[in-house]
Image 1: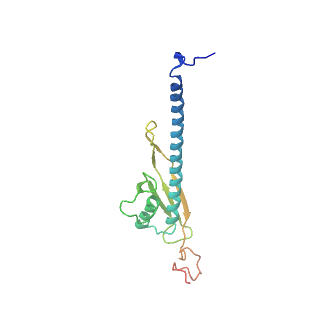
Image 2: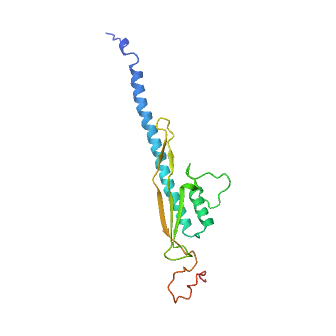
Length: 167
């Protein structure tokens, strides 16, 4: 007995099923890719803030020092070459804030803070489109003397003159 599986009422059903499943699969795949990009950007911004505050902890509180810290956050280098690309696409020095507390010279109570604010993450999938403002990334560290005697060392210390520590 021979069966005829060529039913004319079912022609194209496999194509419709494939289109539905493929649409869902491709949407999920692109969603995973976009989430991965977002997570990478989050980690890169957090790392950039940490890198900047580590650099700020040993810099002076002056305009050159603040500019150098912002460049370290954005480009990974205090003196970036002309045309240097930011470590995170779309990050600019205007997104970076540098704050110093008690930096009237090197002091034990000094603290530096670097924050990245108003960063716009741009989705690359046309259907999602648009941008998303990521939260502020803020990191603080105490100041480091880096070979200098801090200015707020208690009186009576012969090295309390804020000079380089003798070898």
